Image 1 (cartoon, rainbow, N blue to C red):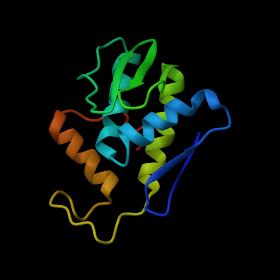
Image 2: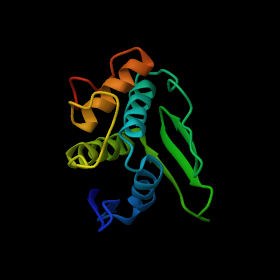
Image 3: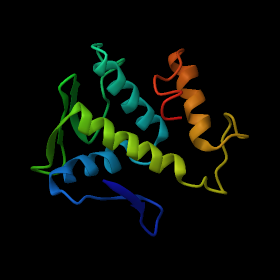
Image 4: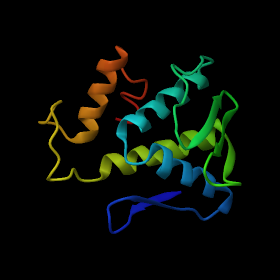
Length: 144
């Protein structure tokens, strides 16, 4: 799975194997352009891969999502028939690739933020995630 942006700087996904189409749609729709949502997904993947419950339930106004040690099951609430079931390894690979895509996007020159404005957006979002959850992100030292 690879990612790019359209003329509005919104994410697009590309898959060679159509079996992963629903996973790509979930990423660009539910995680979207939000670093914090991607950080949540990565932390939840780490939680369930180590036999723990996710630190919180996935919150979405678009999808019903269940994440377990077996992987992810989701169904779009608005698009009939758009649903997917993927193993934890498939999910991990896709979310890690999506994080790399999000983190590589240049910051908007018009972006004004109150928290850590001296840092690139992905680093500021990582620090905010850690401040919010009062723990180091489980991917610190592995992916960033």
